[in-house]
Length: 154
Image (cartoon, rainbow, N blue to C red; front, side, top):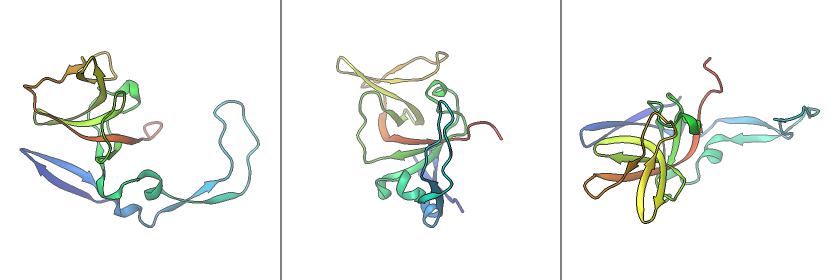
């Protein structure tokens, strides 16, 4: 079962999902790839089982999950209701999706460094990029390493 921990950060509570439920989950992994182009013959045997916690998490003590609310990253295929896997041990680098704590709110955006200035870029034309200035309280909370979502609304 997936449990959530609520951690207070300033005046906000952050819902973090626990990876404990993945400790014993191993799913079948087929030896063949599924074609996204022309169909290919399917192999009828399993290669192995995949341990999702080992597949999704490189640094267990610094990895957390957080649910997305909003549409500012929809063109980067990060949608409302998706679950982000965030590694807090990784350093933000140009072009990476990051979760930031910006002026008391969490946000997910693409980090960009342009001519020595830092920007947080949305992936939706309805939103404007945010230039990070010294007057802002902004901390990169972690780097998004996986986005979990359903392919369609079921």
